[in-house]
Image 1 (cartoon, helix red, strand yellow):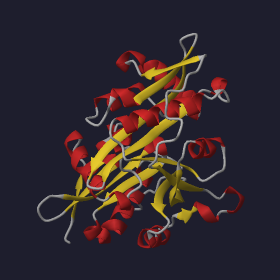
Image 2: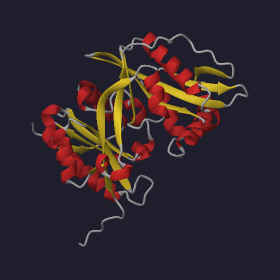
Image 3: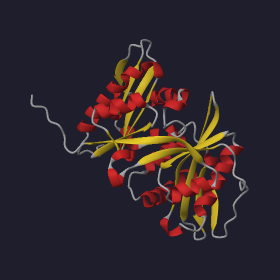
Image 4: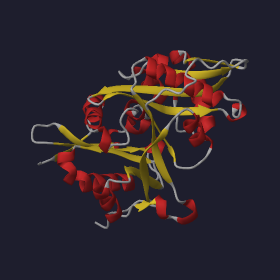
Length: 311
């Protein structure tokens, strides 16, 4: 397949980019939750994305430097697999250009499934290092799946909290403050969160918050849903509980309610991505019936300083 690279031109490109990943869900980690990631402020600068098209202009590959996630997201048509090295070369050049800017990161990460040998070879060839082999700091991820609703899918009653949908635009500021606290990061912004509410795939009933008795937002759980050729798939992204309210059962309660609503709206299976650590998050997902679907390898490349031309 002959391909041609072109610049990202804005919002009109997003739907065909998402459609590419939707068409080949087994090849891509980022599928159902794409509306959340495409709402991020990384695309405030169109130069942070690049597309590849075939002879008739159809999008067959794309790459995005997703600054908030420190990640290079991409998708590629199987028939255009040979373009993968070009995608990595573009991402490498762009990563060097943005060092020291708001869109730069000292390191960038690419997530691939453990059985994607060709992609792994390409990543290794251009200097990305698997974090599965870095000693005591070794790091991998897992894609978990649940296809049978847990036995306790009935509504979870909590005396100290109310679980309900986000109150739209009026509650975005409170949500952003909570999200930043949970993840100890300033990456989430009001503009990003507002854009998620405008996505065609957004369903208000799946955008849940846990509210404490004093009215403070204490937890969040956002569900996404996509109907594809293989059926209706849901995904949880993101999920979090304020440190002051952890250990009280709120995480399980809001997750269970999110799952209940996803199944109620037609989900046949539900996915979630998490680190492959036997920590509280992993235990929470296992407790409601999630099981490992695929192993995800994390590749890292460091970018310490801009590269200046000698010309």
